Amino acid sequence: MAKVRRTQSWFDNAEQHEPYDPLTLVNLARSVELALLARETVPLGAIPPFVGAGVYAIYYTGPHELYRPISDTACHTPIYVGKAVPAGSRKGIVDARSRTAALWDRLEEHRESIAAVGNLEVGDFLVRYLVTIEIFIPLAERVMIRQLRPVWNLQLDGFGNHDPGKNRRLAQQRPAWDELHPGRWWSAQEMMPTPCGTSPEVSIERIRAHLAAYANQDLRAIADVNALRGYGQMDLLEDDIAEVDQTDG
Image (cartoon, rainbow, N blue to C red; front, side, top):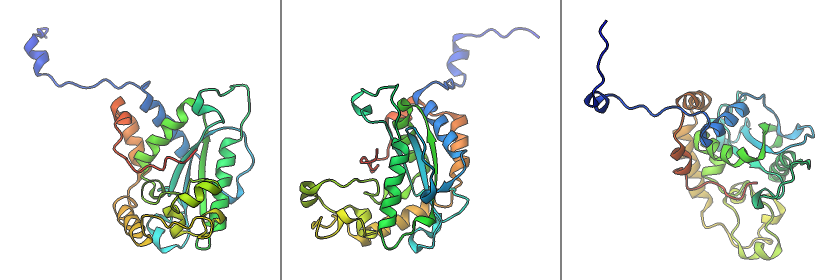
């Protein structure tokens, strides 16, 4: 068979494929996501003490009417994902020799938040968590929010909030999450007298619309396909999600 001569015109008209690079930041973050999704779930109320920082996904399995579209013991669609980084990581002063329980502490905070409210039960929540090295934790969280579309991250702000402190409580609005799921002591009306700018009715409609769009997808399968396809670097840097709960971690 005669060798085809590759002219400049041939190259100009040939299909152009972006080479897959497994070492881009986003593909490395995707590998963390896939490792998390491969882990077994454990009850949120029965997580054994462990050391480390990392990422997690919380799933709802209970009877609450609003979350029925994602209530599934197979845990296909998380209701919330988040991260826990070691103390000092935001300032770049993490001591690699020190030990941290940041991830266990963060999950315990979430358990306490749910245990405090009257219309949710801790026993209806399962969690996957993954200890990973600090540099990839924020990247993996962002990829998971974009990929898995958890409703408490995108449509109901405030689940990941900490007590803002006495002075800020008086000045800040109650989080939307606490309007739908009241019970945390620091968000009670006498502690935070200013109601949320988003009414519970609006939050409910947003949640219903969101779950109608995303609850029936096999997000794990989509994650697998996207990991093989590979995102470009700009997919991470130009994320189109604007309503991510920035208080987490």
